[in-house]
Image 1 (cartoon, rainbow, N blue to C red):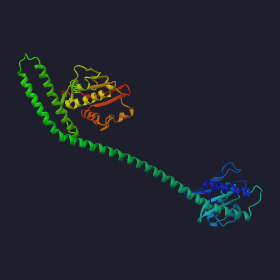
Image 2 (cartoon, rainbow, N blue to C red):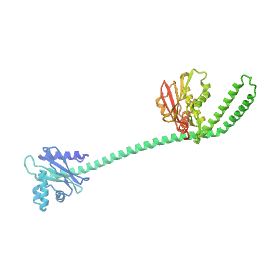
Image 3 (tube, helix red, strand yellow):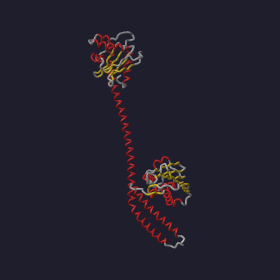
Image 4 (tube, helix red, strand yellow):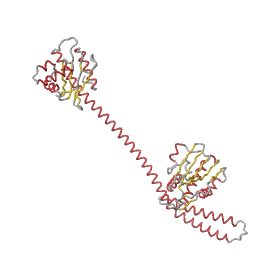
Length: 424
């Protein structure tokens, strides 16, 4: 019995042993529960279906008397005791309710931890001295076993609680490690962007100087050519080309400034921008990349499109990035790109849609395409900054950029920009 570690196993073995050895018509057990401060029933099926035991409090007269005499009791022994009539009657009434011929105390470390209640012997014989000795031995061994089982049960609960806390702590640790990894990635990206900002800042002046010199020379050439005789057939064509070159040099300077502003997060947007014109300028910049390829670019612009409040150079850079990505997605440089603009009165916003018949974007990559330095292009073919910078520019304009795609059937990039605010 002392090797058993479960309370139910100990109580079951005790009840079966007593019933089988002494052949009683029933045997039941009360075990003290510290939480409720009551003796609670632990029964074995036996011949009695219902539980006869009435649970009792720690301060019941029977408990006090058992702790005093420390031996088995019967109703007759209680009747002959020196207890007061009230205590006698209370104890005897309880023994009769239990239909018990004998009540055996169970002690551990000097404390009453259980009460064994036995019915009559099936033979009708009385309990003799040898029975009392056997019951006392069983009670003492069972009390020790119950104490061990209780301690094991508490230890098991503590172990389960410890395992639960370890699991919670492990989950917290995993979360902390994941957060650390995310923070490290963000830090690396931030440091990379900072390095790019420093590079842009360092080269902006060097780029602006030759751009300014080239613009000055073109301006002089334009003025000189303007003095040519009007009969010179290439005069107007050359002037148009020079004016466009001047415009592109200015755009290059503005793009350098906008990149510098993007890296410093200080750019402001105040000018009204004609989206249709910005898209056409982007196509002119990219013209050399597709003019010799079997690529069809279809335009579906809404006429009288309201302007948006923003920065022409930055938005031009966005359209260049989006259209360039569409060009690069076309298999073997062949396909169709549809460019569409529209106005939505409900939201007072302008929409730009770029739809291509390219290879599409794998679903697993969609969540990453606007992240800095993410690219699916081969090494040396892309920096992974085009869509990220475009996303940042659109967000700083108060707009939104989204993409839908189907592998093998192409992608659709949609940009929404708020219109220029009007006074009144």
